[in-house]
Amino acid sequence: MIDHSCIYYKHISQRSLSHFLAGLYPRLKIWCRQELARRKARRKGAQIGKDTIILRQLAKRANRNLTVGDDTSIGSYKLDLRSPVKIGSHVIISNDSEIITTSHCIDSPEWEHKHYGIEIEDYVWIASNALILPSCRRIGRGAVIGAGAVVVRDVPPMCVMSGNPAQVLKQRKCVHDKLVIPSLLSGDLKLYWKVWMAGKKY
Image (cartoon, rainbow, N blue to C red; front, side):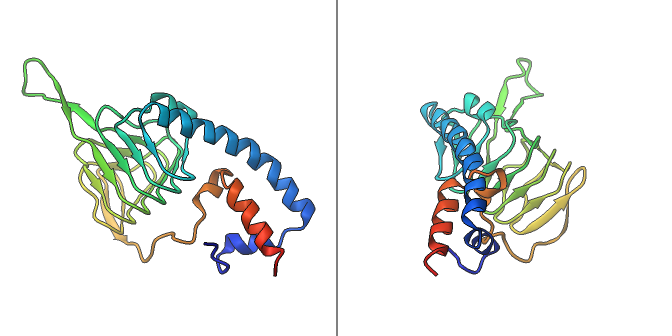
């Protein structure tokens, strides 16, 4: 369902035909590239939701440990998929963020792997160059991880965290539920068309 009150709807629906067509062609190219990445990841066993954006480099490395919800944007390929990574819907993971899910048993003479995994709930934003370490097992709904933060423990819902090690700065007041996340990387082809056509009816 289209939210007529959101900025995205107003911005797209009021475009002239020439302006609309100028935005259509680059979206078509980008959508095709992103659809290929989604299909590649799914063939490798990953579960990728509707209109979710993943990079080609991540799609190449994808496996059944990766589960992603709908309308999520993953702008980094630095996800450690040796352990389960579950990412919710409407999540934004910015460029060069790194999520490490597996470590080593330092008290073992064989130094074997220790698998942890992580769950990132809906409406989380992880900003650029953040580092999520294996000791963080869950990032709660609506949490924000600041750019360059180093996260060493679980993050409560709606918290804004930053620093090294990351500490809670404040509570978030609301989630980004009116943001069209695929539009951040011009992956909104289908909605772009639908909104513009709907706008012509009014």
